[in-house]
Length: 337
Image (spheres, rainbow, N blue to C red):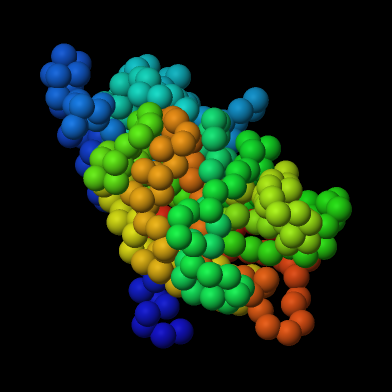
C-alpha cells in the first residue's frame, strides 16, 4: 500500500477530539444572546464543528453524534438526562431543540449512552429530505469516458425518499427488472437554510454540511428513454452516510473520492474535477426550485464507472460489496442481494 493510499484511508475518519468544538462554543451563549448572534448575512446560524449521524431505533431513527467516546445515542441520553437537545437529524436541520444540550449530554452521559462506531446501527445520514436533486456528467473525466461533451449548465434529475438507504444496507437487485447495475461514488450536499434565487457568493451560507453517497444506477433502465429517473430511483438506490459533517470542517470542492467493489478500487478522483462546484450547484438549482433544510444534492460521479469501460462490461451482481470513501467524510458500504 503506497503512502498516498494510507493517507487517504486515514483522512476518511474524522478526528474525534475536535468533534464538539462547535457545540461548546454555541452552548456558552444564553438563549437571548444566541438568538441575537445567530445572523450570518441575515441567515440563522448553522451548527459548526459537529459530525452527526442517525441511529436505527424501533419505529424510526434517532440522532447520533460522533465524539471521542464513541457515537453518542442522543435520543437515549436525552430521555435520561433531559437537556433539551434535538433527538433527530430532522430536528437539527429544522433548527429545533437546543444545540447546547448536545454538549451537555456528551459531558454528562454514561458509558451506556455511547456506541462503538463499528457497532453503531446507522441509518441514512438524512432521513426525510423533501427533495433529492442529482447532477449528471459533473466530472470532466467522467464525461470524457462516456463520450459526452462537458455540460454547459448542470444536468438535473431526481431520486425519491424510497431510494434512501443506510450504511451497511442492502440493495435487492435480484428483485428488479434490470441487469446493468453500476456504482457512482458521489459527494452529497445537505441544505441547511431555505434557498431561492441565491447568488454563488451567498450559496455556501445555505449548506449545512456534506456526506458520502452513492448514486446506484440501473443503466439499462436509465437508457430506456431520454429521462434518467427510472434507472436512478430504484428502492434503496441512494445510500448516504454514515456521517453528516458540518460545512465548516470540509472544503467540498477539494476532497479525494474513491469507490471499491469487493476490495478492488474502481473510482479514484477528487471533487476538484467537478464541472460545477458546490456553490454553483446550490445557486443554479435555487434559481428554479426552493431548496429547504434537509434537501440533499448528489453532485455527480467521477470517472471509472462500468458504463465508461471499453469493450465488454461486467455489471454488478448479487453478492457484490461496494464501498464509497470520501476524504474527511468516511466510508459508506452496501451489499447487493
